[in-house]
Amino acid sequence: MIPSVLPTYNRAPFTFVKGEGTWLIEADGRRFLDMTAGIAVNALGHAHPALVAALTAQAQALWHTSNLYRIPQQEALADALVDATFADTVFFTNSGTESCELAVKMARKYWFDKGHPDRTGIIAFEGSFHGRSAAGIAAAGSEKMTKGFAPLLPGFTHLPWGDHDALRAAVTGSTAAILVEPVQGEGGIRPLPDACLKGLRALCDETGTLLILDEVQCGMGRTGRLFAHEWAGIAPDIMMVAKGIGGGFPLGAVLATEDAASGMTAGTHGSTYGGNPLGCAVGLEVMRHIADPAFLAEVNRKAAAFRQSLEGLVAEHPDVFDHVRGSGLMLGLKCKAPAASVVAGAQACQLLTVPAADNVVRLLPPLTITDDELAEAAARLHAAAAALHVHETA
Ligand SMILES: *Cc1c(COP(=O)(O)O)cnc(C)c1O
Image (cartoon, rainbow, N blue to C red; front, top):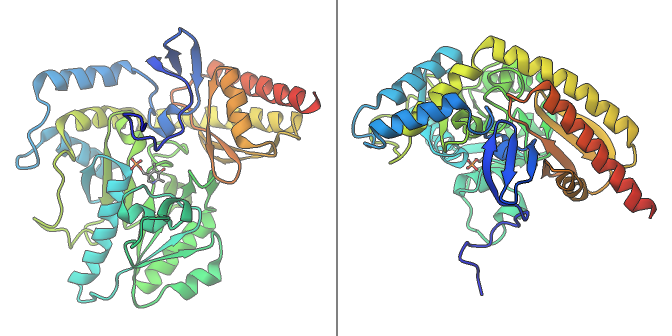
């Protein structure tokens, strides 16, 4: 008999009932060190007092009015994002995949309004992940996500990661936009080198193509800058955001330049819940913390130290791990042992990690994680790896 919850997930057998900073507490009382953070969502950890206060204050005042009326929390958060980024304007969504839908619509509408209704093509990359909606799965293009769901949204081309000649050849007079994650998350923590991001920007400038960055996972301070593309010193035309921006409350956004957004006039797009007072009250508090240069400096300091301890871990367990990769506190352990067995071994040590493609274990802790907790995470990874040796030699 089918479970009452549609069985689209293979869930680990844990039931967490409470969160405190970097810790999750199981129904049976066990405390787990959370290096997953809801897949890069709980950027300020669990039950951060400032977020709890912002949410409860807003909950007592007003939950929902719809976008028929002005929403002051939404305007304040949009102002904060515009002040802190390349963007001139923001549309709020409730998830990453909704941000993908709008990014694609925005790019196509841009060219339609400029008198090029045939410029509809979106170039995306193998190994990418952009969500589970129609545009999201068409953009990722992997068989795992698209099989059985045809016909897919047309107009998407998929290129191998890092093949510059293929990219140059693929951009034609019918290309609307290039869509890329500066650091692939689900694809296995694969950072796009700064030089490639600069090259993409230059190619887009040369051909008029719009550059859409998907910073749903790598944005909001995860890499040590507010947004990952800042490391390359470039700016996109359109950017998808979600996950960390709500700190655990469902919230997403599409940021754009005035030019890129020029087609999105009144009536062209909407959302019942997008930009609701609850989500934006929390998002504003998240922005206040993460956009602070002192907060980002701390992320970078902690990330550098943690990365060094992970290099030591790999050196000590060369049969389990291959190498460390990633940026800031968006780190991947490329494994030699099956990543699933490393994740399970870590769970046995009450440490939560998340697997990704390419046999990688992802470490995406709350950005507020302390030095002691990072040391504890490294110790538990050592213990998990040591237990794997014992099993192998047994
Ligand atoms: C998670 C993710 C998405 C989809 O976000 P949802 O909120 O699950 O719809 C899109 N792009 C990237 C890079 C992601 O990591």
